[in-house]
Image 1: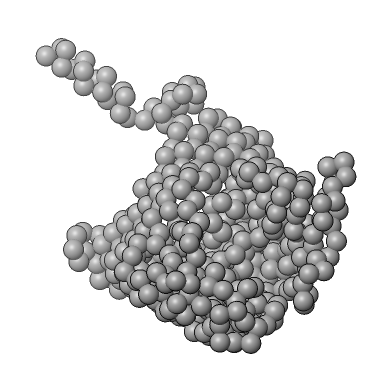
Image 2 (image 1 turned 120 degrees about the vertical axis):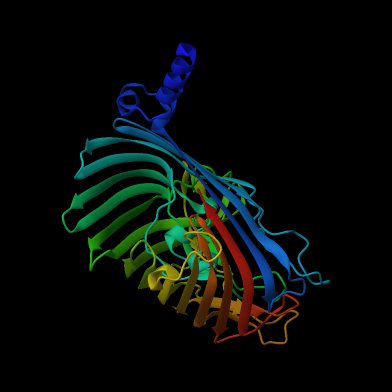
Length: 440
């Protein structure tokens, strides 16, 4: 009997978290945290391909973090195949999109200079994936065509050093940060083509600019630098509600957009302003708000093999027919929630609910090229095209699991979207798909 009691006592000590030990032993298990996120999308219908009914996203995101007293470290991976689905026609591209099978999304470490219950001031060093403005809508807006920093693909994280502040007050919380980075990418929605071929296969995608100078990219570095600042606040509102405000500004000169060879670069000056304001009731039972973004891309420049003492000298790209600089403004409105708000839950199992979301987004001022080639359209180059998007979703929610039926619709002023043969010659695009997510 004594042996049994000893065994149970030892197990008790191992299982029950020991805070004192975690504070004194750097390798205590309580200092380590693991997060896992699984995500998949299944295409039921779209207007731009012939081979629907296929899985076009399947990813596993894993985060390992460590904190001991006032120091911390984090590494986050993304595994999967977020490839671009292609159409089985003679005019389709022969590649299979961007596979991105294994990506380091975050790899950083830091130290807290101040670490109290009310204030935290942290020096951050390494690769981050900043989270800024919130998109109050379903998966299609929140991730698929999201151009905010948080929605950028994992390949386009930011590498640098930053000073971060977090404060807790009676009214809520404040977060702020300012950083100096190797790169700070910006995103715009995809569409059009410069050649009139069937190279643009999905109207529901984004193009990211400013990736070549990050540390996990194999392309040569140009020493271009970026600065970014963030501010966010969470204010306690009526009953169990929170008012959420987030904002970000970033700027980078000569952000590399293309590397033709070891000494031939294309670059653009970039800047990004984004913000969101919304209301979150009872941890997402109802959320609603708006998001704004203004991305400026300067005219494309090339260095024409001019590199002196590790300094890259650029000139305007004389091959362009029209000036390709522009400022694209995005404004969106959305809401989401679940049936727990109305007391309607525990349908298939205790605690589950029906989820819903709807949103509208307008993209103004972005320039596209298209027409010509195999299209039935007169070619156009760097013309301003405004786009409107609608997104609706309904789904099933249980803890960290969510299954959504998503519908997204887009209308553009010019024919920049591909038709069923992947030829960009239509103004309208839509897609119906299933999105499944599990977060642990």
